[in-house]
Amino acid sequence: MSRRPEAQYDVLVAGGGAGGVGAALGAARAGAKVLLVEKYGFLGGAATAAQVLAYCGFFQQGAEPVPAVAGAGSLVLDQLRRLGLKAAPHRSETTGNWIILLDPEAVKLALDRVLLDHGVKVLLHTRVAAVARTATALEAATLAGMDGRTRVAAEQFIDATGDANLSLVAGLECRVGDGEGRLQAASAPIRIGGLAPDLQIDRQAIIAALADYTAQGGAWPVLRGDGGIYTRVPGSTDLWWMIIDVEMPNLSSDSFTRAEQALRAAAQDYVGVLRDRVPGFERAYLIQTGPQIGIRESRHPPARYTLTGQDLLNGRKCQDGVARAAWPMESHDTPGRPIYRPIGGAGYAHVPLDALRAAKLDNLWLAGRAIGADAAAYASIRVMGTSFATGEAAGMAAALGRRDPTTIRQRLSGLGALI
Image 1 (cartoon, rainbow, N blue to C red):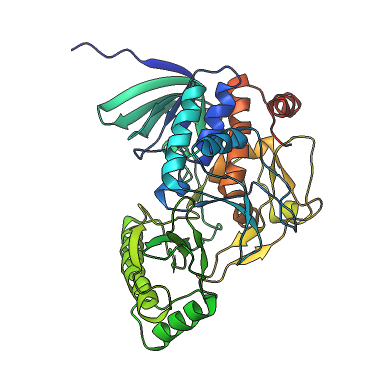
Image 2 (cartoon, rainbow, N blue to C red):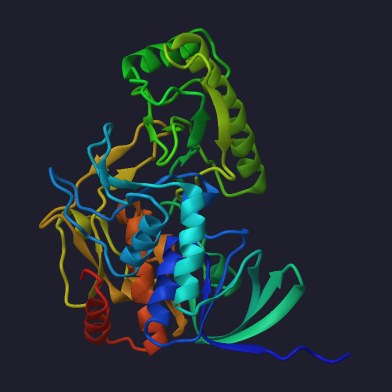
């Protein structure tokens, strides 16, 4: 039997969320031949797989939306605008933070198009199943996809999987959660239809109805006491509602299964409560959960530098900074009770290049949720806007094969990134 020729790329990116798309664009715009692999049949990460229909981290906190992310992130926003989305800053009624509202189908198509425009090869329905490595570098990856297993060689690799799957199969010992095994709570945004376009939603009525449901022994006690975060889905009359929080005791398949099943049952109950008790929701119905629960945290691979909460509280700037972290440190240690701590200084902190470099492996880079960060800093850098920026920086560095932050900063700035 003849062996299929081994494919060769300059940069292999694992994961097609914001970090992976940013990484692929950063590498491609530096002239690299790039392959991006994604386990789902679409790109977008949490925005499309977990229905987190808001890009956080593009702007600093404050009375006005001061940009913190541009570059590759701006390319994506431009594609969304071509598809009819405003992709403009929207101030959350609940938190006061600036976000960009999303439609998941537009996100999927926009990411397809922006990567195609930049010559990135994309393989959906594909995972990195194994790697070949030396003591200090990765050499090739075995991909598991619809056509079985194939081997791909690359000069540089980027882990943008969120769950550090590439780092895990590469044999790196990863921290779980905060280092003591505690994970941030998962959330399950849901989509609701059947509402009049001009309905003025009564938050207090929602709070009272959910409190009554919980007090009367509802099967799924509501953990958020503020009525949750909600907004209309752009281009529709549907309501996007983040009200379901689920504690994640560990990373086992059993825990994930229980969480997924709980979110579906709770979603049905909560929509029923709105339909029965809140004016204007009489015809409300559940459109969608998922496709998966929104996991905030899992494994953290070791990096050359660990960004700290103190770095962010001080708004630390550094000569080797290659991206801005501006989203407040949003901790979900207790389900239903998020805590926000603002970024200090000028409203953003630098992410140094070494936070994107895996420890021990010279050609493995980290992007998005996988970058080096302690528990406090992670609560900020994990969001999708920041992930575009750290991904772009990792992709640029990988494509150039450079560890020199000055060159990386100059090249990123020349392409419109904010440093």
